[in-house]
Image 1 (cartoon, rainbow, N blue to C red):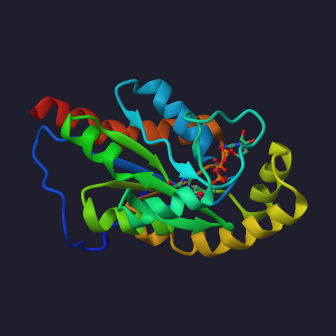
Image 2 (cartoon, rainbow, N blue to C red):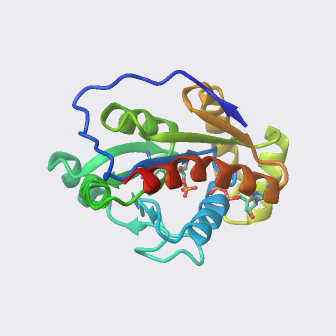
Length: 209
Ligand code: ADP
Ligand code: 5GP
């Protein structure tokens, strides 16, 4: 686990007070383990809200609308860009992904901490407006392990895996933007490290308020 000091400064900052919730952001290259780790966190901290992202990519087998993602059409997504619906949005692997700003602001105002599973582009946008966010980057032990995990997950075609591995290299080069970096080698160890980070902020604030 690695604490980084650097954080982009922001404009248009959301006001914070001791009763307001905090954002936790988890990023990783595709296949890095953020879905698995986010689920473990939501199970462990049942008072933390999970921000369900919107996407224009088609659902994978087993994914449920409104649970894993809100699956929407490209036209709808673009309309919501114009109407200022997104706290952040990005094009990732040829599809749009976005986070509802209404959901974040309502949750934070009611004092809830919120977990976001978003990419590096989205993290930079969120930090502009929510600079207190706790950012965590999940690294695979190696690119080869990442490829194997993507293959074993059996949700992507060969071409898609190739594309995701190319993006992975670029994303991993930006891990220094994050406050914490966890190498996701042994799953149980990664979960423990992640829980330790969240506990440091989540309970401290509960005690103050
Ligand atoms: P992401 O959401 O970042 O795309 P996933 O959570 O879907 O990644 O993980 C990709 C695959 O790797 C899944 O099949 C998952 O079960 C597996 N996986 C995740 N973490 C580990 C780990 N530490 N060791 C072995 N397999 C893992
Ligand atoms: P996947 O298609 O594998 O579920 O996700 C692909 C990538 O999109 C991952 O890096 C994931 O973190 C990112 N992602 C998921 N939701 C969002 C979102 O709301 N905003 C942004 N910027 N990225 C997202």
